[in-house]
Length: 228
Image 1 (cartoon, one colour):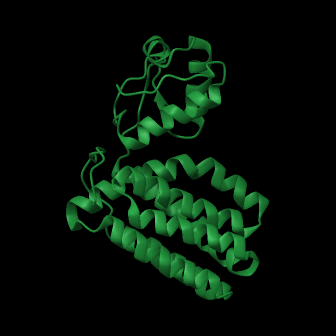
Image 2 (cartoon, one colour; image 1 turned 90 degrees about the vertical axis):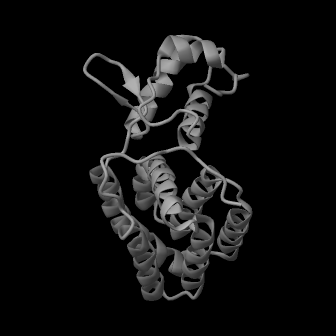
């Protein structure tokens, strides 16, 4: 299990971030068991911060625990994927409309840089991470604290959602990176126009492109791959 040893072993946040990276990249695949002793040994930390990190990850939907306290990486079913898309459909258009009204030149430059980085991404894991960061940037530029709180709860699940959906899209169409870049450019242009109605409509169109790709199989593969 290719996890990186941590230098600041007392910080559960560092552990949470490292485990999140491993889950999203597929180093810790769907269904993988997460043993506190094994993780502590691999990361070079005690079990206490591992336990704290796993509790936080469970609250964020990145891991699940059964009745016996055994923790694992979740496998998102088609129903899970639909639920997350439903919540995004409530949040993303509002964020885009508010960003069109309140976004600054600095916000838009940051989103531009994200799109450029996505165009250079070599793996699906990179595309997924940058995709999540792009939408996080829109929420931040919206300037609504309560919307930001809603996004903070959902963000990790969105990244996990994107990881699984982009693997599915790549298997079907082999165009994940290019479609992501094109979609984000269109959405950013709509937000930049300063027209909230146009930005909201484009955000809905962006999400609708995913709706047609939702799988019907019981599970999805999560191994990242090259897109170059």
